[in-house]
Image 1 (cartoon, rainbow, N blue to C red):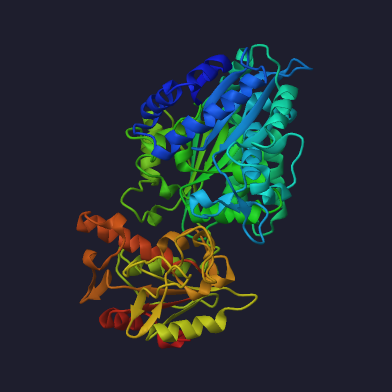
Image 2 (cartoon, rainbow, N blue to C red):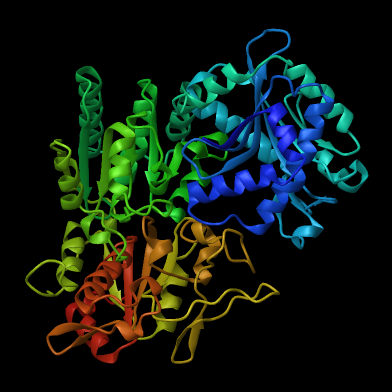
Length: 617
């Protein structure tokens, strides 16, 4: 969807005055229910006029269609302009994606070939405009049905209309192809020439209709690449009932296709039961079966890690992995299959949807929707993904969900006993806490101080083993200082450590937030629920904070001790459930062993009582 579609002639005429900016502003308000930022309006005013002048000088105003702020399928990203027309030699539809920049200067970030610094943005690192427009072209080709096999019909040009080539010379170090180029005010004539080689002056209305009317789904070459990426990554191996689940979902998908009906599959299981492994294998197998399929989660850390592991060899693979809020305007049943991993993270509504439940958006998006979840991992009041919620939403539509329950355990040393012990410990299953009976495949101990925990885990951290420390959200969370120093927010009796980073870039030797659980440098910081959830490591340290303490014969919760803003103002019973779920997630990240510590002496004494001394270190 474009914010505005105009013929090049009308585009040129409106750019001569404020009419174009005013029309875009009104359209923006209608779509996003808010006023556009001042900077965006200024960009429309300056950059679109510069492009209009180029189209006029190229003699293209007589026919080319201009799609302004064209949204990329299943994302919130928008290309500045897409020009739609006929190819002058073949007569086939031809499209040019234009990225417009008001920059007057730019230079590369040292030791980087795709990041640049621009003085007008206070030297904040930005993506190289050639990389940006190239990715837009690839994405448009990958997800637009009418463009499958027509990659040559899409070109991408970045136009730095305020810059002279000498002032952005470093940007030209990035290799450009015939269909992906950067132009400046100095090379404006070359831009005109390239546009004329791609677009004829005849009407582009049919080409624009074709693009805007196309269905959107990942194309077959992209899905084959994604399948190969999963296949080549040995981290993801199926065992026993995991393979049963994959085969059952494949069968259900075939039935849905054959009977032309919708299907819902719910795969539930505890931590370490293999839900995410199943999701990735489903992606691989369904892609190989020729199904249009996407993977979605509600976790930025989890999705970023998948990008990191699977997209290193082929960056376009990343586009197969979406977020739950990507489907608010998706075409109904536009996909064969949507795989919703970590479905307990489903929100009540998407950020860009004020009334429609997010679960309905997901159910609408595909003919078969697969939800993989753990009911005990809901940790925010805005999260509502549960077996019961999904079942009820499906039944309101006349569908009876198919259920698959995973009982096997592959985390915590494969110890079903440990998972059951944790549920009883936290009151998430009835019966109350019981002493830990031990398991030869899993070690559990209590530390008497955070220093003791850190020392023990540091000994375990090595080239072949991983260790992490996590804590309840009971301390403030500061940003690093301007010189890159991390603040030691987690302070306990003279011992202190920083939280993991919140940002997407490494700082001061600490990894980006989303990679804290998988980067070896993550050991130096304390992980929180939002970075630990969905991950695993060999050795797991968990600090119980003052938000959950043992008194007498029961747990007591203290909302005043929590620094988690998402939990502020909610009723105490709900706070108690979410905090218990939080510690349940933190306690079940370890593959080999877990060390627990509580800042509260009485709680620590209770943990010592429940965990026999033979388990101590």
